[in-house]
Length: 286
Length: 126
Image (cartoon, rainbow over all chains, first blue to last red; front, top):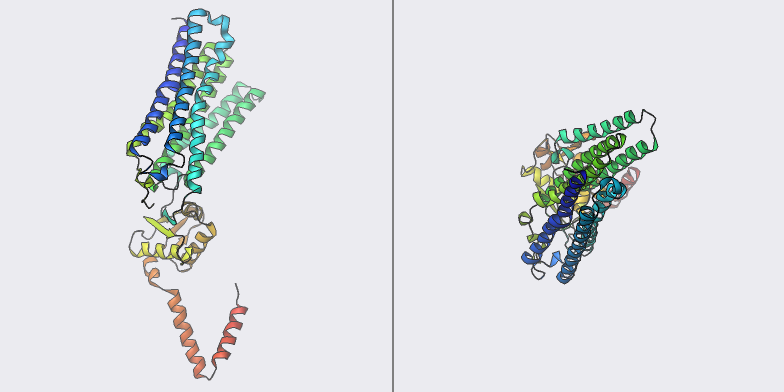
């Protein structure tokens, strides 16, 4: 089996997963809300009209179709027009990484719009009754202690590993990698703290729904942190032995696993039909 | 266990908090030794100023309904149930009534008592 064939197979999987399978699940969730929670019965859910939401949904679908088209085009090009991996090594090396970033763009747009929607929801909130749980929220109520220890150990191992392979000279590449992982971990900690102790983003959300969401966010952040650190360790190892074709594979697998931990986990664990939408009804009191 | 506050209610927010926590203790919805949320968490959840929650916690701690154990957090006091029954406002009224009766028996007038009361209060400002 040629290297090019394996790379193309992994790329097909990346296109299918990130631009077809998961977007389809996201669209299913949007459709579920539009069908089961109509604007007239659930006014607190609609701060933009349902027509606008449908337009956003269509734009999201079109963006993903365009990405599928580009992805399949690239696969076709490298399968039938180019067959020599070594000849196009530079293009193929960066392809999964650049295409992977592009594949996450529609989801980022959806996230930003969702954030704006919740902000609008908070601004227009008129209810004067406020509820709170009389129980403290601690990190270990949501994620097991061993997982946090594992994340810390992975981070420490990564720093030691980078130092060892750079012969304790701390070259630019090692500094950038250690700096990136540290910054990302600080950012993840801040996001985690905001989810644990911060204000509710959705003012109508019930406490048990919030706890479910907090658990999901914390676990996703933790897994992404561990996985990203391992990815960079493997990356350093691959660079050391100049195994470019393996780099292409791990870049592609990185994006696929990233999608699995983020969108995949959201869809799989936060089932939409388990969510309580009654809080968005006109007469509901949260 | 949830607490509910009403923003538009004329009762001050910190009083609502104190009353609800005391009710929760009396109804055994929270028991001695149970951990309570941090000031920041409760203020964020209720979307009120953290100073309001801090004031409520201070009053509850004064009444020995809750106790703060440094970095470990805030807990329901071991004698919280007995201490909740104690009404400090009622106690102040009783003490003042007894003192005023004694002063009046000694021949002090209402205005003399009022002036002396204000003086003492002004001298003992926090």
